[in-house]
Image (cartoon, one colour):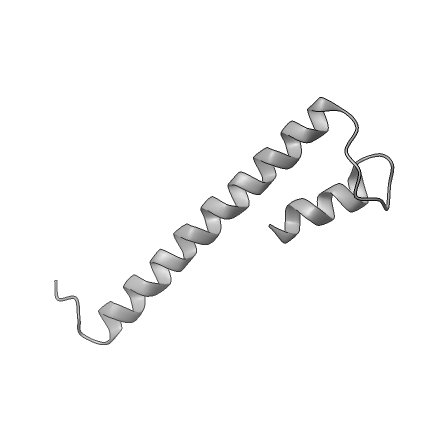
Length: 60
């Protein structure tokens, strides 16, 4: 989520403001936010599985 916000702040005109004027920028912001949320969920699941595997809760 932080990446999408800072992308807006630094790379979308007007620079250094949290304003989105064009529809293409709204789509880019939404896509970047969705990808960030999906990756963070996958990382959290992988971490939980690793902890469960390491502690012996999951046996292969």
